[in-house]
Image (cartoon, rainbow, N blue to C red):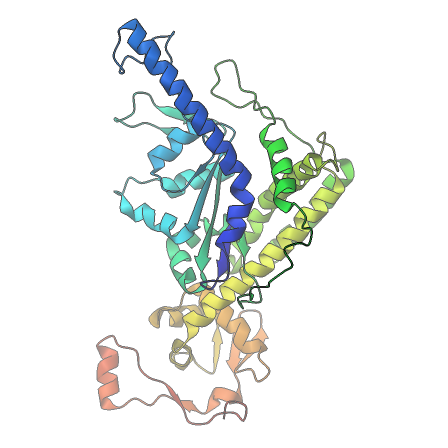
Length: 415
Protein backbone atom coordinates (compact mmCIF):
# COMPACT_ATOMS: atom_id res chain seq x y z
CA UNK A 1 0.00 0.00 0.00
CA UNK A 2 1.12 3.54 -0.77
CA UNK A 3 -0.17 6.68 0.94
CA UNK A 4 0.08 9.52 -1.58
CA UNK A 5 0.00 13.23 -0.79
CA UNK A 6 1.83 16.51 -0.87
CA UNK A 7 4.48 17.28 1.79
CA UNK A 8 2.97 18.06 5.18
CA UNK A 9 -0.41 16.47 4.42
CA UNK A 10 -0.04 14.01 7.29
CA UNK A 11 0.86 10.68 5.72
CA UNK A 12 3.08 9.43 8.54
CA UNK A 13 0.78 9.84 11.61
CA UNK A 14 -1.77 7.24 10.40
CA UNK A 15 1.01 4.70 9.99
CA UNK A 16 2.36 5.48 13.46
CA UNK A 17 -1.10 5.05 14.97
CA UNK A 18 -1.99 1.83 13.16
CA UNK A 19 1.31 0.08 13.82
CA UNK A 20 1.81 1.18 17.42
CA UNK A 21 0.46 -2.08 18.95
CA UNK A 22 2.68 -4.11 16.64
CA UNK A 23 5.72 -1.98 17.53
CA UNK A 24 4.84 -2.51 21.21
CA UNK A 25 4.80 -6.26 20.65
CA UNK A 26 8.16 -6.05 18.84
CA UNK A 27 9.55 -4.14 21.83
CA UNK A 28 8.37 -6.91 24.17
CA UNK A 29 9.92 -9.55 21.94
CA UNK A 30 13.19 -7.58 21.87
CA UNK A 31 13.34 -7.47 25.67
CA UNK A 32 12.66 -11.20 25.76
CA UNK A 33 15.43 -11.73 23.23
CA UNK A 34 17.92 -9.78 25.37
CA UNK A 35 17.00 -11.88 28.42
CA UNK A 36 17.46 -15.08 26.44
CA UNK A 37 20.83 -13.83 25.20
CA UNK A 38 21.95 -13.21 28.79
CA UNK A 39 20.94 -16.74 29.78
CA UNK A 40 22.66 -18.16 26.72
CA UNK A 41 25.92 -16.37 27.46
CA UNK A 42 25.84 -17.44 31.12
CA UNK A 43 25.25 -21.03 30.05
CA UNK A 44 28.20 -20.84 27.65
CA UNK A 45 30.41 -19.44 30.37
CA UNK A 46 29.33 -22.12 32.79
CA UNK A 47 30.08 -24.82 30.24
CA UNK A 48 33.49 -23.30 29.56
CA UNK A 49 32.70 -22.69 25.91
CA UNK A 50 33.17 -19.64 23.77
CA UNK A 51 30.32 -17.64 22.24
CA UNK A 52 30.80 -19.23 18.81
CA UNK A 53 29.84 -22.69 20.02
CA UNK A 54 26.25 -22.43 18.90
CA UNK A 55 25.64 -25.95 17.57
CA UNK A 56 25.11 -27.75 20.86
CA UNK A 57 21.57 -29.15 21.14
CA UNK A 58 21.54 -28.10 24.77
CA UNK A 59 22.57 -24.53 24.02
CA UNK A 60 20.48 -23.12 21.22
CA UNK A 61 21.34 -19.55 20.31
CA UNK A 62 18.36 -17.18 20.74
CA UNK A 63 16.88 -15.58 17.65
CA UNK A 64 15.12 -12.23 17.53
CA UNK A 65 11.49 -12.45 16.50
CA UNK A 66 10.21 -9.18 15.07
CA UNK A 67 7.46 -8.09 12.70
CA UNK A 68 8.18 -4.56 11.44
CA UNK A 69 11.36 -3.72 9.56
CA UNK A 70 12.37 -0.55 7.73
CA UNK A 71 16.02 -0.41 6.66
CA UNK A 72 17.10 -3.84 5.44
CA UNK A 73 18.84 -5.89 2.79
CA UNK A 74 17.10 -8.75 0.95
CA UNK A 75 19.22 -11.20 2.98
CA UNK A 76 18.18 -9.55 6.25
CA UNK A 77 14.52 -9.67 5.16
CA UNK A 78 14.76 -13.42 4.59
CA UNK A 79 16.53 -13.91 7.92
CA UNK A 80 13.85 -11.98 9.83
CA UNK A 81 11.04 -13.82 8.06
CA UNK A 82 12.67 -17.17 8.80
CA UNK A 83 12.26 -16.52 12.53
CA UNK A 84 8.79 -15.01 12.22
CA UNK A 85 6.82 -17.34 9.96
CA UNK A 86 3.57 -15.55 10.79
CA UNK A 87 4.68 -12.71 8.53
CA UNK A 88 6.65 -9.47 8.37
CA UNK A 89 5.89 -5.86 7.47
CA UNK A 90 8.13 -3.54 5.49
CA UNK A 91 7.08 -0.14 6.84
CA UNK A 92 8.91 2.77 5.24
CA UNK A 93 8.09 6.43 5.73
CA UNK A 94 9.17 7.22 2.16
CA UNK A 95 8.54 4.19 0.00
CA UNK A 96 10.71 5.56 -2.79
CA UNK A 97 13.71 4.82 -0.58
CA UNK A 98 12.80 1.14 -0.70
CA UNK A 99 12.60 1.19 -4.49
CA UNK A 100 15.93 3.00 -4.69
CA UNK A 101 17.51 0.41 -2.39
CA UNK A 102 17.30 -2.04 -5.28
CA UNK A 103 20.07 0.01 -6.92
CA UNK A 104 22.07 0.25 -3.72
CA UNK A 105 23.51 -3.23 -4.07
CA UNK A 106 24.80 -5.25 -7.00
CA UNK A 107 22.79 -6.64 -9.89
CA UNK A 108 22.05 -9.80 -7.90
CA UNK A 109 19.59 -7.92 -5.70
CA UNK A 110 16.34 -9.85 -5.95
CA UNK A 111 14.14 -7.82 -3.61
CA UNK A 112 11.47 -7.09 -6.23
CA UNK A 113 11.38 -10.73 -7.37
CA UNK A 114 10.99 -11.85 -3.75
CA UNK A 115 8.10 -9.42 -3.21
CA UNK A 116 6.35 -10.66 -6.35
CA UNK A 117 6.83 -14.28 -5.31
CA UNK A 118 5.59 -13.62 -1.78
CA UNK A 119 2.48 -11.88 -3.10
CA UNK A 120 1.67 -14.97 -5.17
CA UNK A 121 2.39 -17.32 -2.26
CA UNK A 122 5.36 -19.00 -3.94
CA UNK A 123 8.18 -20.31 -1.69
CA UNK A 124 11.26 -18.16 -1.13
CA UNK A 125 14.72 -19.64 -1.02
CA UNK A 126 18.01 -17.94 -0.22
CA UNK A 127 21.34 -19.68 -0.77
CA UNK A 128 24.31 -17.48 0.12
CA UNK A 129 27.94 -18.24 0.86
CA UNK A 130 27.75 -15.96 3.87
CA UNK A 131 24.93 -18.00 5.41
CA UNK A 132 25.65 -21.13 7.40
CA UNK A 133 22.51 -22.76 6.02
CA UNK A 134 20.16 -21.98 3.13
CA UNK A 135 16.85 -20.33 4.02
CA UNK A 136 13.57 -21.75 2.74
CA UNK A 137 10.24 -20.09 3.52
CA UNK A 138 7.47 -22.26 2.13
CA UNK A 139 4.59 -19.89 2.90
CA UNK A 140 5.92 -16.31 2.75
CA UNK A 141 3.88 -13.38 4.01
CA UNK A 142 5.55 -10.03 3.32
CA UNK A 143 3.51 -6.84 3.63
CA UNK A 144 4.69 -3.47 2.29
CA UNK A 145 3.35 -0.07 3.28
CA UNK A 146 4.73 3.44 3.00
CA UNK A 147 4.12 6.97 1.81
CA UNK A 148 5.20 8.92 -1.24
CA UNK A 149 4.99 12.59 -2.18
CA UNK A 150 2.85 13.44 -5.19
CA UNK A 151 5.72 15.00 -7.13
CA UNK A 152 7.77 11.80 -6.72
CA UNK A 153 5.15 9.48 -8.23
CA UNK A 154 6.79 9.42 -11.69
CA UNK A 155 9.89 7.95 -10.07
CA UNK A 156 7.80 5.19 -8.51
CA UNK A 157 5.94 4.48 -11.77
CA UNK A 158 9.07 3.51 -13.64
CA UNK A 159 8.76 1.24 -16.65
CA UNK A 160 10.36 -1.77 -14.97
CA UNK A 161 7.84 -1.73 -12.10
CA UNK A 162 4.95 -1.37 -14.53
CA UNK A 163 6.27 -4.14 -16.75
CA UNK A 164 6.81 -6.72 -14.00
CA UNK A 165 3.41 -6.08 -12.43
CA UNK A 166 4.71 -4.82 -9.08
CA UNK A 167 2.57 -1.65 -9.12
CA UNK A 168 -0.52 -3.65 -10.10
CA UNK A 169 -0.30 -5.33 -6.71
CA UNK A 170 -0.21 -2.08 -4.72
CA UNK A 171 -3.22 -0.33 -3.21
CA UNK A 172 -3.12 3.47 -3.29
CA UNK A 173 -4.59 6.01 -0.88
CA UNK A 174 -4.79 9.46 -2.45
CA UNK A 175 -7.14 12.01 -0.81
CA UNK A 176 -9.14 14.16 -3.20
CA UNK A 177 -8.65 17.14 -0.90
CA UNK A 178 -4.93 17.85 -0.75
CA UNK A 179 -5.26 20.82 1.60
CA UNK A 180 -3.50 20.52 4.96
CA UNK A 181 -5.97 20.59 7.84
CA UNK A 182 -5.62 23.38 10.36
CA UNK A 183 -4.98 22.61 13.99
CA UNK A 184 -8.06 22.72 16.17
CA UNK A 185 -7.90 23.58 19.87
CA UNK A 186 -10.30 21.57 22.01
CA UNK A 187 -11.38 21.64 25.62
CA UNK A 188 -8.94 19.44 27.52
CA UNK A 189 -11.57 18.66 30.12
CA UNK A 190 -13.91 17.14 27.55
CA UNK A 191 -13.96 13.32 27.69
CA UNK A 192 -12.35 11.74 24.65
CA UNK A 193 -12.84 8.21 23.34
CA UNK A 194 -9.89 5.93 23.95
CA UNK A 195 -9.43 5.13 20.27
CA UNK A 196 -5.91 3.83 20.70
CA UNK A 197 -6.98 1.62 23.60
CA UNK A 198 -9.74 0.11 21.49
CA UNK A 199 -7.43 -0.43 18.53
CA UNK A 200 -4.76 -1.94 20.77
CA UNK A 201 -7.29 -4.38 22.24
CA UNK A 202 -8.47 -5.48 18.78
CA UNK A 203 -4.99 -5.85 17.32
CA UNK A 204 -3.54 -7.61 20.38
CA UNK A 205 -6.31 -10.18 20.15
CA UNK A 206 -5.26 -10.89 16.58
CA UNK A 207 -1.54 -10.92 17.46
CA UNK A 208 -2.23 -13.43 20.23
CA UNK A 209 -3.75 -15.94 17.83
CA UNK A 210 -1.61 -19.11 17.80
CA UNK A 211 0.64 -19.67 14.81
CA UNK A 212 0.97 -23.48 14.65
CA UNK A 213 3.82 -25.01 12.64
CA UNK A 214 4.79 -28.50 11.56
CA UNK A 215 6.84 -30.76 13.80
CA UNK A 216 10.06 -29.28 12.43
CA UNK A 217 8.89 -25.75 13.20
CA UNK A 218 9.71 -24.45 9.72
CA UNK A 219 6.31 -24.36 8.00
CA UNK A 220 3.09 -22.69 9.09
CA UNK A 221 0.00 -24.87 9.41
CA UNK A 222 -2.48 -22.33 8.06
CA UNK A 223 -6.11 -22.07 9.09
CA UNK A 224 -8.23 -21.67 5.97
CA UNK A 225 -11.49 -19.72 6.11
CA UNK A 226 -13.84 -20.57 3.26
CA UNK A 227 -16.41 -18.20 1.84
CA UNK A 228 -19.99 -18.71 2.92
CA UNK A 229 -22.19 -19.84 0.04
CA UNK A 230 -23.86 -16.46 -0.50
CA UNK A 231 -20.50 -14.70 -0.09
CA UNK A 232 -18.91 -16.97 -2.68
CA UNK A 233 -21.75 -16.34 -5.16
CA UNK A 234 -21.40 -12.57 -4.70
CA UNK A 235 -17.60 -12.72 -5.05
CA UNK A 236 -17.77 -14.84 -8.22
CA UNK A 237 -20.41 -12.61 -9.84
CA UNK A 238 -18.30 -9.54 -9.13
CA UNK A 239 -15.09 -10.95 -10.57
CA UNK A 240 -16.82 -12.59 -13.54
CA UNK A 241 -17.99 -9.08 -14.46
CA UNK A 242 -14.34 -7.97 -14.51
CA UNK A 243 -13.43 -11.01 -16.63
CA UNK A 244 -16.15 -10.07 -19.14
CA UNK A 245 -14.70 -6.56 -19.36
CA UNK A 246 -11.19 -7.87 -20.00
CA UNK A 247 -12.39 -10.44 -22.55
CA UNK A 248 -14.21 -7.73 -24.48
CA UNK A 249 -10.90 -5.99 -25.23
CA UNK A 250 -9.63 -7.13 -28.63
CA UNK A 251 -6.27 -5.37 -28.65
CA UNK A 252 -3.85 -7.03 -26.20
CA UNK A 253 -2.03 -3.73 -25.76
CA UNK A 254 -5.19 -2.17 -24.32
CA UNK A 255 -5.78 -4.85 -21.65
CA UNK A 256 -5.53 -3.39 -18.15
CA UNK A 257 -3.36 -5.93 -16.36
CA UNK A 258 -4.30 -4.45 -12.99
CA UNK A 259 -7.87 -5.70 -13.28
CA UNK A 260 -6.67 -9.30 -13.34
CA UNK A 261 -5.06 -8.82 -9.89
CA UNK A 262 -8.16 -7.45 -8.16
CA UNK A 263 -9.44 -10.87 -7.07
CA UNK A 264 -6.35 -11.46 -4.93
CA UNK A 265 -6.62 -8.12 -3.14
CA UNK A 266 -10.39 -8.49 -2.67
CA UNK A 267 -9.92 -11.95 -1.13
CA UNK A 268 -7.25 -10.65 1.24
CA UNK A 269 -9.42 -7.72 2.31
CA UNK A 270 -12.39 -10.05 2.86
CA UNK A 271 -10.25 -12.05 5.29
CA UNK A 272 -9.03 -8.85 6.98
CA UNK A 273 -12.59 -7.60 7.56
CA UNK A 274 -13.75 -10.97 8.88
CA UNK A 275 -10.87 -11.24 11.37
CA UNK A 276 -11.32 -7.63 12.50
CA UNK A 277 -15.01 -8.29 13.15
CA UNK A 278 -14.09 -11.35 15.18
CA UNK A 279 -11.48 -9.41 17.16
CA UNK A 280 -14.03 -6.66 17.88
CA UNK A 281 -16.56 -9.23 19.10
CA UNK A 282 -18.88 -8.64 16.16
CA UNK A 283 -18.36 -11.80 14.12
CA UNK A 284 -17.10 -15.34 13.93
CA UNK A 285 -13.94 -16.94 12.60
CA UNK A 286 -15.39 -20.11 11.07
CA UNK A 287 -15.95 -18.66 7.59
CA UNK A 288 -16.00 -15.38 5.63
CA UNK A 289 -19.49 -13.95 5.47
CA UNK A 290 -21.25 -11.87 2.84
CA UNK A 291 -20.83 -8.57 4.71
CA UNK A 292 -17.03 -8.97 4.75
CA UNK A 293 -16.97 -9.67 1.01
CA UNK A 294 -19.16 -6.66 0.24
CA UNK A 295 -16.99 -4.44 2.45
CA UNK A 296 -13.85 -5.68 0.68
CA UNK A 297 -15.29 -4.97 -2.77
CA UNK A 298 -16.34 -1.48 -1.70
CA UNK A 299 -12.78 -0.89 -0.55
CA UNK A 300 -11.43 -2.21 -3.85
CA UNK A 301 -13.69 0.25 -5.70
CA UNK A 302 -12.26 3.08 -3.59
CA UNK A 303 -8.66 1.98 -4.14
CA UNK A 304 -9.20 1.65 -7.89
CA UNK A 305 -10.78 5.11 -8.08
CA UNK A 306 -7.75 6.38 -6.18
CA UNK A 307 -5.39 4.56 -8.54
CA UNK A 308 -7.02 6.18 -11.57
CA UNK A 309 -6.59 9.62 -10.02
CA UNK A 310 -2.93 8.85 -9.31
CA UNK A 311 -2.47 7.83 -12.95
CA UNK A 312 -4.19 10.98 -14.17
CA UNK A 313 -1.89 13.19 -12.15
CA UNK A 314 1.17 11.38 -13.51
CA UNK A 315 -0.02 11.23 -17.08
CA UNK A 316 -1.18 14.85 -17.15
CA UNK A 317 2.28 15.90 -16.05
CA UNK A 318 3.79 13.57 -18.63
CA UNK A 319 1.82 15.05 -21.53
CA UNK A 320 2.78 18.64 -20.71
CA UNK A 321 4.56 20.46 -23.49
CA UNK A 322 4.78 17.27 -25.59
CA UNK A 323 1.11 17.28 -26.53
CA UNK A 324 1.42 19.62 -29.50
CA UNK A 325 4.60 17.96 -30.75
CA UNK A 326 2.91 14.56 -30.50
CA UNK A 327 -0.22 15.68 -32.36
CA UNK A 328 1.86 17.32 -35.07
CA UNK A 329 3.32 13.92 -35.96
CA UNK A 330 -0.14 12.49 -36.63
CA UNK A 331 -2.35 12.88 -39.68
CA UNK A 332 -5.87 14.25 -39.58
CA UNK A 333 -7.10 10.69 -39.13
CA UNK A 334 -4.97 8.13 -37.32
CA UNK A 335 -5.08 4.88 -35.36
CA UNK A 336 -4.19 4.23 -31.75
CA UNK A 337 -1.16 2.24 -32.91
CA UNK A 338 0.11 5.17 -34.95
CA UNK A 339 -0.35 7.47 -31.97
CA UNK A 340 1.76 5.15 -29.80
CA UNK A 341 4.56 5.18 -32.38
CA UNK A 342 4.40 8.98 -32.54
CA UNK A 343 4.41 9.12 -28.76
CA UNK A 344 7.71 7.26 -28.58
CA UNK A 345 9.33 9.98 -30.68
CA UNK A 346 8.42 12.64 -28.10
CA UNK A 347 9.03 10.40 -25.06
CA UNK A 348 5.38 9.66 -24.19
CA UNK A 349 4.75 6.18 -22.83
CA UNK A 350 2.02 3.94 -24.25
CA UNK A 351 -0.08 4.39 -21.10
CA UNK A 352 0.28 8.17 -21.39
CA UNK A 353 -0.77 8.09 -25.05
CA UNK A 354 -3.90 6.06 -24.34
CA UNK A 355 -4.82 8.35 -21.48
CA UNK A 356 -4.26 11.39 -23.72
CA UNK A 357 -6.47 9.91 -26.45
CA UNK A 358 -9.27 9.35 -23.98
CA UNK A 359 -8.85 12.72 -22.26
CA UNK A 360 -8.60 14.79 -25.45
CA UNK A 361 -11.69 13.14 -26.94
CA UNK A 362 -13.82 13.71 -23.83
CA UNK A 363 -13.09 17.39 -23.15
CA UNK A 364 -15.93 19.97 -23.49
CA UNK A 365 -14.19 21.26 -26.64
CA UNK A 366 -12.48 18.04 -27.76
CA UNK A 367 -9.47 18.28 -30.01
CA UNK A 368 -9.92 14.63 -31.01
CA UNK A 369 -12.97 12.72 -32.18
CA UNK A 370 -13.17 8.96 -31.72
CA UNK A 371 -14.57 7.60 -35.00
CA UNK A 372 -14.71 4.00 -33.87
CA UNK A 373 -12.62 1.59 -31.82
CA UNK A 374 -8.94 2.46 -32.25
CA UNK A 375 -9.43 5.23 -34.82
CA UNK A 376 -9.40 8.99 -34.16
CA UNK A 377 -9.72 12.23 -36.10
CA UNK A 378 -8.52 15.72 -35.28
CA UNK A 379 -11.30 18.25 -34.86
CA UNK A 380 -11.45 21.86 -36.02
CA UNK A 381 -10.05 22.92 -32.64
CA UNK A 382 -6.58 21.97 -33.85
CA UNK A 383 -7.07 21.79 -37.60
CA UNK A 384 -5.38 25.16 -38.06
CA UNK A 385 -2.43 24.35 -35.83
CA UNK A 386 0.84 24.64 -37.70
CA UNK A 387 4.36 23.71 -36.83
CA UNK A 388 6.50 26.80 -36.73
CA UNK A 389 9.93 25.54 -37.55
CA UNK A 390 12.63 27.92 -38.60
CA UNK A 391 15.77 26.69 -40.25
CA UNK A 392 17.35 26.70 -36.81
CA UNK A 393 14.41 24.70 -35.49
CA UNK A 394 14.84 22.08 -38.19
CA UNK A 395 18.52 21.82 -37.42
CA UNK A 396 17.69 21.44 -33.74
CA UNK A 397 15.17 18.73 -34.54
CA UNK A 398 17.79 16.82 -36.51
CA UNK A 399 20.09 17.11 -33.52
CA UNK A 400 17.52 15.30 -31.41
CA UNK A 401 15.94 18.28 -29.72
CA UNK A 402 12.19 18.70 -29.54
CA UNK A 403 10.61 21.14 -31.97
CA UNK A 404 8.32 23.79 -30.65
CA UNK A 405 4.78 23.62 -31.88
CA UNK A 406 2.67 26.72 -32.12
CA UNK A 407 -1.02 26.95 -32.82
CA UNK A 408 -2.18 29.76 -35.11
CA UNK A 409 -5.67 29.88 -33.64
CA UNK A 410 -7.11 29.23 -30.22
CA UNK A 411 -10.63 28.55 -29.13
CA UNK A 412 -12.52 31.11 -27.09
CA UNK A 413 -12.08 29.34 -23.79
CA UNK A 414 -8.31 29.18 -24.16
CA UNK A 415 -8.10 32.85 -25.14
